[in-house]
Structures are given as structure tokens and as C-alpha cells.
Image 1: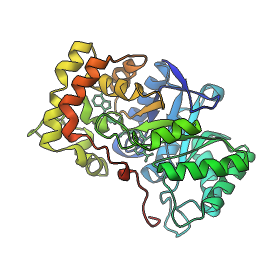
Image 2: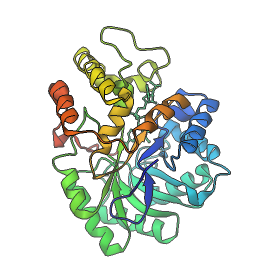
Image 3: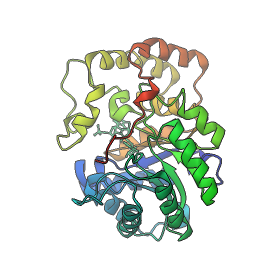
Length: 332
Ligand SMILES: NC(=O)c1ccc[n+]([C@@H]2O[C@H](COP(=O)([O-])OP(=O)(O)OC[C@H]3O[C@@H](n4cnc5c(N)ncnc54)[C@H](OP(=O)(O)O)[C@@H]3O)[C@@H](O)[C@H]2O)c1
């Protein structure tokens, strides 16, 4: 496993990290969840990403138990706050009240005294940014989080938060956007701003939720047990990629992956890691074999000719519009 700095901070993270959205506490049974975390640790992944909202807070609990007994200093544990964690109107968003309550719940479920990175899961248009950043500053100053990050924030939002973070003397070091060969909306605005400010990207769904593994065939039913068959939530999230045009063009990448000596999933993960502003690619997995497959993308260099050939195949299906970086206009 290779390691990178998280943005311009001194914190090192594994360039491939493991995340448990949709899987833990929901799509997969607990023994499979534990086996995937074990596989991640065994292949040298030290960075784990979750969120208070995943599986109605159960995902943090599963991850906390799966990591119990590991040396805490050898891990980087990331979680997030914003999406609803309860029925109340204050069980959501980035108010001081919800941030202070949610960090305590996350630490309890994760069975740790602190998280390495605490992330604003979206921008909250109903809370003054000053209130949010002051609450984050108190979380950091009380030792409950070491670094602060955001997720799916626009370049202008990142810039303003960074200015406040400097005033408050807290380290805002990362953004967590969706990024893959198929979803490149951060490239024109978020990445240049982040590079200037020393913020690193921790990118999600680098395999486009499994689509870039090439296992979904156009005109065929999805393989049994795959995310596209998960009625609880996976199927609706992956549906944006499940069109014949996308699946047909993705199949055309297979010979390129073979020529490069990579599996399709490895090619997808290696592709996002070619961007120097990416600090880590968060992969999900329902089985340990997927972790073993994906991790081989670490340290892989893709040459310019291969990158060009990929672009020629998928250009019509790539989303690049920076306006697709967005948070709900109102709190969910
Ligand atoms: N900040 C945010 O708003 C946000 C949003 C989404 C995700 N995230 C983070 O990003 C993490 C990763 O997201 P993701 O799970 O969508 O990422 P992903 O790595 O693109 O997709 C993971 C899924 O693809 C399938 N898969 C993985 N490796 C495979 C392989 N080698 N061969 C075949 N299928 C494979 C598995 O699903 P099946 O086996 O079920 O097909 C797996 O659960 C999340 O856990 C979370 O930590 C953050």
C-alpha cells in the first residue's frame, strides 16, 4: 500500500481507503462486513470512512466493532455529519446543536475517543457557515476530531470555509466528492481551488458503485447479490449508471484494462489516483475478494496513451458539469 498526505496536512492516509456506505448494517451480513474490514487491514489499508447516517447509524457501530482491538494510532478513522440521524428537526444539518450531539454519538458507536477527520457531509444552507465552523472548532479543540473536512462542497463554499478555518485556527484539509472516469465534475473548479488552498480530495465511488468493474452487461439482468439488486437503497443509487449506453461503452474498456495487465476495477481505482489532488480513493466492498482485487491499483501508473484511449471510448457518457456539485437547497 502506498500512502499520501491528506491535502497539505502532515496526516498520511492510505491511498486506497475502505468505506462502508450501503454495505455495513444493511446490504451485507455482519460476518461479511467483518471479513471485508479484516481484508482491508491485511492488505495495508489504514484509512476507514463512514458516516453517522449510514444504515441509520448502524454502519458506524459495525465499523467500530470490526476495528476493536486494533492499535488506534495505526488507523485513520473518518466520519461525517449532516444527513438526518433521527426524527427531530434538529437531528440533521450543521447547526451547533446537531454537530455537538452527533460527534458524541459517532464516537460512542465507533468506540473511540476521537476521529481523525470529521466531515460536513453536505453544505447546510439553513445554518450560518460561521456557526458551523465555530462548532467544528470546538470539536477540534476538545480533542474529539483532529482534522476537519467537507463533502460535495462547491469551490466557493470551500474557499469561504477555509478562510474561517484559518481564523479559528483549525485544519480544514479535505473535500470528499464523487469522482470516477464517468463523473468528473470536480475537475474544472473544485480541484484548482483545492490545490491552491492545500485541500486534498478523498474520492467516493471510484468504481462507479461497481459499474466500472465491468460486471454489469447491457441488456442482461444484474448479477445476483450485486448493488444493482439491493432494493433497500443500492439499486436506486446505482441506477444513474445503469443505462445501455453506459454499460456498452464500459465493456469497450475491457481490452484496454487487459493490455495494461489490470482488472477493470483496478483500472478504475488507478485512474482516480493519477490525479495528484486526490489523497485517497475510498472503495466499497461486499466481499474480501473485491478488496484484494481493488487494492492492486495502488502505485499503478497509467500512461498518457492509455488515458487518451479511455477518453475516446467514454467521452459521450462522462459528466463534467461543475454545477452537479450541489447540496440540498433545504435541510433534508
Ligand atoms: N460523501 C458522500 O456523500 C459519499 C457518498 C457515497 C459514498 N461515499 C463513501 O465512498 C465509499 C465508497 O463508495 P462506493 O461503495 O459507492 O464505491 P465503489 O468502490 O465505487 O463501489 C463499491 C461497490 O462496488 C462493488 N465492487 C467493488 N469492488 C468490486 C470488484 N473488484 N469487482 C466487482 N464489484 C466490485 C461492490 O458492490 P456489490 O458487490 O454489491 O456489487 C462494492 O460495494 C462509501 O463506502 C463511503 O465511505 C461517500
